[in-house]
Image (cartoon, rainbow, N blue to C red; front, side):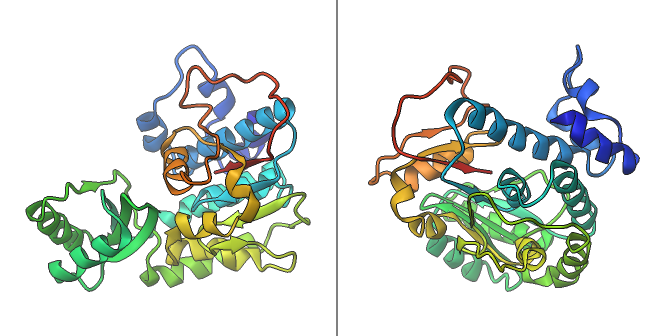
Length: 290
């Protein structure tokens, strides 16, 4: 996987990732974040598509893939819409655009309605709900000074706010200019028909065959993620086995919370050291989330 990605890295003047990630002293997340812009995004993209390929080799192709924010690029690549090299190029293009996006994101351990109430009570009109993970986690985004105000008000209300360590804003309507530039960049890449269903947590639905993917990917800069909504629209797949195709387990945790009544199996392979990569017994279809 990273041999393919390193071709794109070389074209963009970036350090090859394969020898760095798989060498004797692999980088930390901080090391990747402090490298040239786009390095971290290429590493995360590569990890997600690698997990997808490994799971497909052992468990078969998934019934659907679900893209969440930046993970939409990996999801579309996993579905065969973009080649690995082109998906890596799109990930790098997004990283360059994100470098021009002001603001930040703050995690509030509450649902969307309470987060919106805290924003209103803090008197911060430029702060918006950016991501709804489940009924206990909401990300809000906006100018840094106004995020300070929301965090202070939340603390007084007994809600512990956590500022994400990201040097950019996202999922904010003020980023329309950046979204237009990103859409123009995405249009340079050929898109094939998806081999499997692709759901988007930003669009809140399954993508159609005639979808303008450049605009839909650009929407991830200006529109919010609402994970509960898209999971509710996945029909019979709500009882499938969900695998988080990423480096952490927070997405799997949220899927488990939202779909608790449906009782799906939820796994985060790279976050669970005990995860069994062997063949699975026959069972319900799987869905991959990036």
